[in-house]
Length: 122
Image (tube, rainbow, N blue to C red; front, side, top):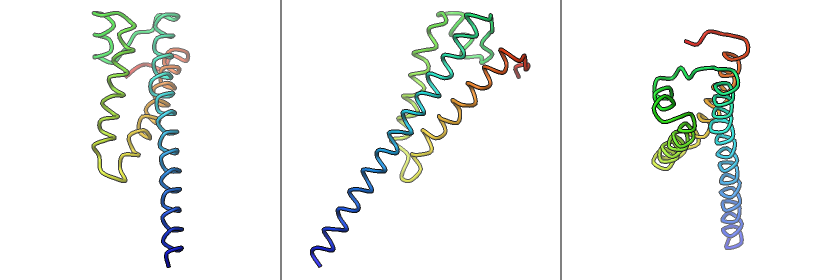
């Protein structure tokens, strides 16, 4: 009986470690796509191709504080997302990095399409 309890505890510890590793991987991917992907495409197309930021808050920040103000704003958004991740009860926190991944993919592709193919911004 004691051996079975010990084995069960070991399995739970291993499952928790795998879950933690999976979550960390999601956060790395979220930061890569949401922060780097969106920032790189936005800054590249503004600097190299004369594109303009169409998001009202982003365009105000660029106009008043400069293009590189997007970097701390993006990290502030990540901080808010992480705070939400910490507050939301299980099993829902996983949705935060997944949502950031999806938003990062969308904005990177959208920035590229608007700036290269000429799809009009909405």
